[in-house]
Length: 444
Image 1 (spheres, one colour):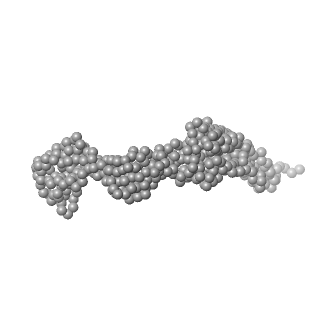
Image 2: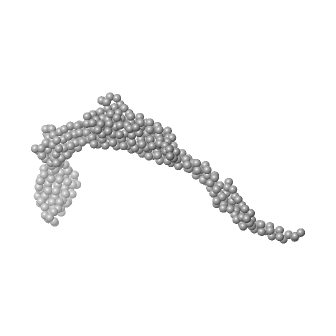
Image 3: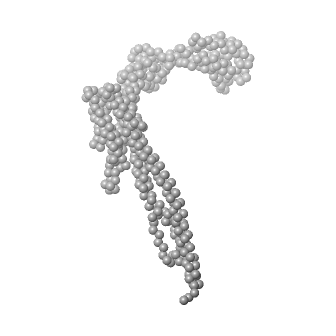
């Protein structure tokens, strides 16, 4: 309890006490346990922030490891090149086989088209009908005195027989244009039995593309040719019957190298964050927030085991080091691009097997561990974060309850010391009364 000093002169002058200051001193002394809890909360807050950062880094690493594990991802990606892009361009899926091909484009696929002579505004298009035949579908199109080009187009479009009709206008008038919805011979259509005033023209007949692939004749209803070379898409751009286009299918070393670089970068970010928590600042004599965290130490050990994982056989390509991905003294990874490129060019099968073998692949094994590590309820970091959050919640309740009790105590102290203050302020009056009474007594 705070001490209260009163001098005789203060009492004579009617001075009281600073109730607020006195009560504040008492409560401040009583808050000693609360300050300990608040310090603990601040410490747990720093730990939680550090763990959340590591958790995010761990999730980022998991996405990069999964990319290495994906059998249709970057490690198996292919790149296709064309010697004459003006004739055809090409792309390859991961299933494509590294190879070279010669392609000759004899003719492009065409789309069947009809159009009419121009019709002046408000001019009649006659009465009667015409028949459109698309494969096995036959559509009779009626035209009467009230018909317009747009109403004829609407009728055709409403029947969904594989063609699209539109009205095209220019300075000469309006034309009805009918276009097949499918290119190639299968999409070709004809107009017969025309009894209207419309005059139809057919500038383009639907025909299949014609090409040869390594001397083998190939036809395609579309100018996008799939299946001729497994896993390869040929996009025909121009006919050149006298020109051979060279197609090369190879590993996409740029994409593969980038995937490896991304993996190493994310791993380095994580391991630096983990290692940094075990540092000690001698100047301030303090450690990082998680310096004594056993869960983080377990994660560090697990990451080291995963990154030094090794398989047997595989023509000697058994660990990251053999592929040019080197472990440094500080636990980070460094990519030797010269060694990596050499492995990719000469031992691509072994490279992929090391990472993606279902039985013992590096990325497959690492991914399994990361699934456990990143589990929000079972993983080391997730459990640690939950424990800290629970402790922080308990401390918050403890502090709030303590503050509630202090609030009641504060009201009691204010009432008590306000009474003392009032009594002290009445002392001059009491002294005057006593002095007056003493003065009225008869003198001896």
